[in-house]
Length: 454
Image (cartoon, rainbow, N blue to C red):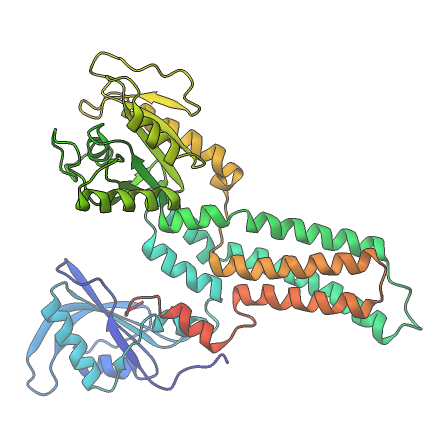
């Protein structure tokens, strides 16, 4: 499967919009030739590999200068894709970038597909599949912590762990096959040692599986719903956390009639904060629709911030909110600490914090409490150095299940043939994590999630 492509691809590798610099990337056997046709150096300077050059992009037909640029040629295999690669650093206007890209395509390149540069890096052996996925995670990382974990995966931390487990299984499998093929010449299978080895590998796989929740959170953000009855300060709390006027705040109950979602970085944790419509019984059709959506958000939330107005006594609507949130992890936020307290908080079976969303008093304490609760909720996952995604989780779960079956077979002291069947399934499943064993359809599905130019 791993081979160099015959065609040359090109794309704009920087986001749409204006910026100081925009990059046109070219990869393939014609990359250097295309650059030489379009790039005018101020002298007879040669285009050498891994050397930054200054010059002009010139239309070969009209001889018109399109842009003053820097350009770099990277000769295969010492490039991201493993092919000849050229990057042209233009001024960041879209008109200039599109014109340069158009010239490159006229010289024989074709427009790259989504994720095709990274896909070529995988096909050419520069990255394995889990490292390629880490490229996308690094681009999309909502916090510095998430970016750090993605970088660790890109550097091969997950790959090394999985490859080590797979190598140990392959070694055991070779011993099993030796017993099967040369039963008269080799000693009998040591069931006790085999059981210990498989249990140790299962424990390590289970440790990787335990990082699945953290992986999802650091990639997508922790779904955190702000809930409460109308006019308790939910939208004010959202604005205070964001430090901007994102939600409309009025004294009229029921102002928020739809969910509002924003992402914040809370000491490295990406929190996907969702402001919801106030929960109460209503005959208003529009408000009722918002409340129905709130109930769905509560059911899907990883964490809830239950906002109560401490300046009033607990009432039937507050009780309704507490009932709806039952079973969801979270804390109670007693808002309006700038007003006299009237609420009796005894019997509230959750961590409680008092603050004023209006003045900001207590917000730092709220952040600390949320972090503490998340650490309890996720346990050691919050400090994981390796995290997995949903695809990895599915592969590792199959490997774990196969090893569980193998251990049952070993416990019954069945012959090596039966153990080897389950062992092979586990080896295949681990190989799918890094792409050692993977279908073209799966590869295409993964790289279709990338943007063009990456």
